[in-house]
Length: 66
Image (tube, rainbow, N blue to C red):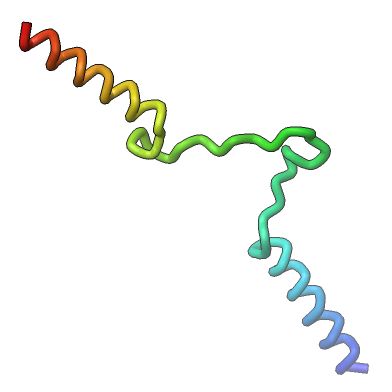
């Protein structure tokens, strides 16, 4: 009987650990038709930000040369 209780306890602990540290599910996208785009972590990871920065530098250099 003690072995059955130990097995049930081990399975319960394993299930709880799996839910806590297992693969993450995105609950917001469940049932959603379009997946969300993850935001960049930093400005230098954002291609749109880098493009605007490059355009600003070009405009500044063109303005300084005139």
